[in-house]
Image 1 (cartoon, rainbow, N blue to C red):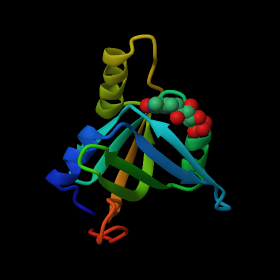
Image 2 (cartoon, protein in one colour):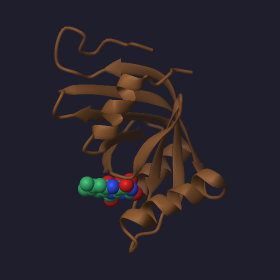
Image 3 (cartoon, helix red, strand yellow):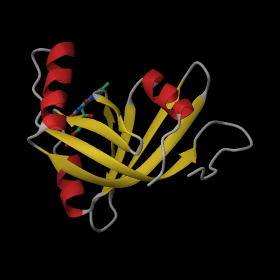
Image 4 (cartoon, rainbow, N blue to C red):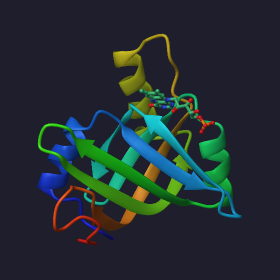
Length: 134
Ligand SMILES: Cc1cc2nc3c(=O)[nH]c(=O)nc-3n(C[C@H](O)[C@H](O)[C@H](O)COP(=O)(O)O)c2cc1C
């Protein structure tokens, strides 16, 4: 487990979106923008599937996911890596449905994609750029 610190949570709260990278079993890369997301626990990030097709297909074949976030104001950024699981029922899924409905009632959440973070990297420009912090 890699703990998401308060400073990281602030960056996640201010990010303009989540850049969500997956890959096929053969390593063909895929990265998509995601707006519906949040910190779920000390070491989990929730991303909500509304339109994802290839991303879900990739996760089913290869659960490794990388998520990049950044705050344009402070110029702080982080990358979180881990294995993702997909939930289509239960509390997290129900909360995901509510999150989407409350912001864009015309859209429907299809699943909750939960990334269990096992490593974290600094993506801020500067001397620590690229450093693994967890
Ligand atoms: C600003 C922005 C925010 C988006 N937010 C979401 C999101 O929260 N959930 C989602 O499933 N798709 C979201 N999308 C759409 C996906 O990024 C896009 O449809 C992408 O192709 C995902 O599908 P794929 O995995 O099949 O490629 C968003 C797109 C943009 C441009």
